[in-house]
Image 1 (cartoon, rainbow, N blue to C red):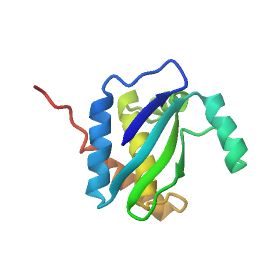
Image 2: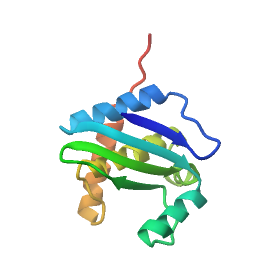
Image 3: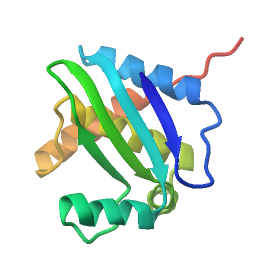
Image 4: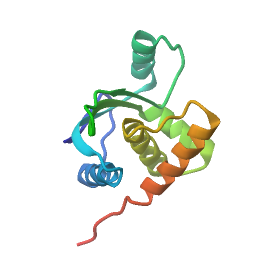
Length: 140
């Protein structure tokens, strides 16, 4: 089950569509959906987690904690809405596109993709682009 939690004044307009998309991404990687919690927060909230759990004193857009068991994906994905907004401006993309990239990035980590080396980062970006194309709005 995919859930969305909010630690700031922000709300996804279409949670069901995002949830459905993330579910389809998981299936497309031959994984099973477990409990995945997205926690939307601000920079200060995420910086505190980064310092406390990872000993990093830097701002970041996403931190994911992976509790997956075998092929069943479980985890907590913390997303700084402030970072996503700033990155969208820096990369000259829409806020929603950058948000999709960050949301799928966390799940791709659970699927086994890394981003520590240049080669891994390139593959991660290709996978992000591929999965973002899977997002579509259902029209009645």
